[in-house]
Image (cartoon, rainbow, N blue to C red; front, side):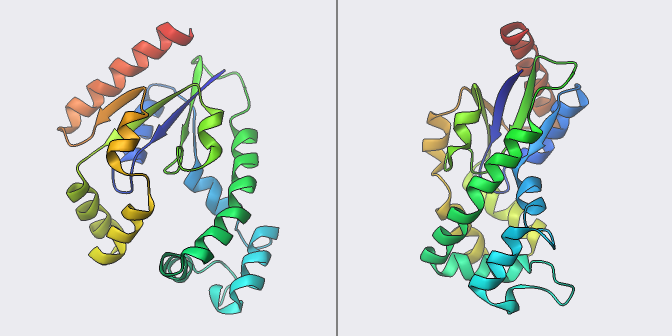
Length: 199
């Protein structure tokens, strides 16, 4: 079973593109979902985060207060490094488990990850697809979706790999600034290519 990486900056539309592959019968694992799973109440990682940042990082129900954690780590780079060094190995291990071969109808599966190139997750994939939109579009979409300030969204984008660098590492690019019908066509074309390459 071949693993293909699907990445892109925040607000680029990775989830939309992953769902289009899913409609073609492609199994996919989302690193963001896995990142949430490994810090659910009762998970060892959540306990370590609470010990490090203090109990205020949890909600009253004992879940991770994501908005609070995000604001802490994006204001203090050394705290972000600590969090990444804790979570990235745990996330990678769980991704590997969820991507393990099963009887899927297609010869490849997708690993959807915003940090594919920034972490060692790129070592798990044979090829990579970058979902691309202009930075202005990323900012507008993320502000609408997450009700974050422009400044916070720009900080998140600055912490990710620059767009040009990401595009340079791509084996395939999906232009998600195009009309939806055209994005669907790009996905179908790529799916056809992968069936031939990996089938």
